[in-house]
Length: 523
Image 1: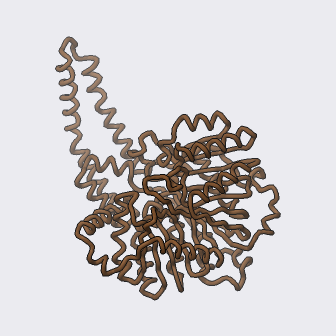
Image 2: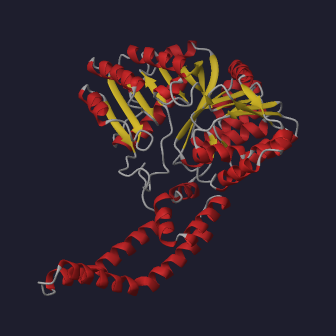
């Protein structure tokens, strides 16, 4: 999948080229035809004067184009109204800078085009065949939604091991990487060049040197600081390293918004990992935020193949190499062994660059269908109006709505934007805890005793609207109970928010929340 400029961006680019061609003869005459012999100051003054005269002549046309651009933004843009208003304010009050920012960081019009071309499939027969009458209505609806919005198939037989901190997670990852015999497919949003990153890189190098095919893709912005020396070391050992949507200037580029926030490891078709942990010592609790509370998951079984398919799709973007997930080289050594695994149905749902915001829709469905409880752990509480309203409605209807978020900040705007939503949720009857032991970065949801979710997607606009994410939805009471039990443990390391205290918070807090809320559509 390649991202191209939308029509209006192409027109803007053509207009810029036409402007450059129009001004070129003037510079040609100044540089090559005008008499020489003048001083450098006179020479530069002449160039700048002529350029200013030409630009002034184009100003009416530039102003007209600008007005048309704003009108097109107002009437044609397909995105939430808060973000539209914010862009309008930027365009109006920062005329030149606003246009440049919008061109480089504006909406993904390709998604709107894909949605227009999308045609829904029918119901999901495999679910009927596998579960029959035992399947509840909410599980049927949720699973069908995942299939119809993201083509995610139900993976019936799986082992699911939940991992709750960096030490436990990376010990498991290093152990499984060292056992790889045929291939390692690995992608990460952040891959730090620190002690942990170099240790993981050394394992990859050793496996590649022994004949294992090792593919690694990292995000162009998240891993922008990954040292060239470490990359070269891996490549010299045979590791195939690629960058997902590389950018030369990551803070000013049209690809800035389209980041790959996924964390996936697939080994020999036998075992796979995904979840909230990036690679770096900070994710083991050795960074400035102290103890790092996160949730990762290790799969064996059919879910491994589903994660590998998502990796190969991203690999195609990163490398241009077409690899089929049906290639026998990606299959496990004994595919028949899947039938011997426990019956734990799983759907691996990707989002980003597709017709629908599938994970957002899955979250909404889990909240709307919950009958007894919806317990959520997330580092950011900026879900947008629809999910926020669903949470408040569920709480008002008597569902046990609990949210656990960090008590300390890792991003200023995200932190205060999250806090800006607390009061309304408390008024509706939801309960919220602020984690105090360190920083909580897990992205988990539990709906009743039926559906659990673990993955990479935060409860914020960037994860749910823009980023490439992956989330596992697990239809198993045992996994729900385990996640709920760990939620209770985390509650003991947190302070519950009281509505009376929140209403009396200082004016400084309210101002900071207002600033965070204003920019929450962009964080």
